[in-house]
View (cartoon, rainbow, N blue to C red):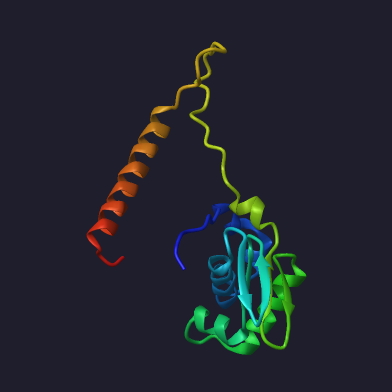
Length: 160
């Protein structure tokens, strides 16, 4: 599993986060990290299964392992039930596994439309594109430097 996900700072003010225990927060973040970011198909037992973005197949033991030391089945079951009641996820279990769906995944993780920049407040002609502010240009430069350094490390074969 590789890649990244978006985690908006607004979560800090959300009632689900404010009312959660530290263990429940670990479970939430772990499930966000486990969720598929794109449609995925696989075959198992002669049947083809399709998962949508925001869904993943897991088991309680697997989820407990990914959440780390100190996690118990009781804590996990309680948290899954609470998060389902609050509308954060849906949980469909079978005798072999469970499919968890993060509700509103597409809204929070969907592709952003990149905007070149905000208007400077002056009148822009319709034939001239808006220009990015100095702060936005510097942010993009830092981002490009980070991405290039990351690519360089990967080409050298160094572990991250």
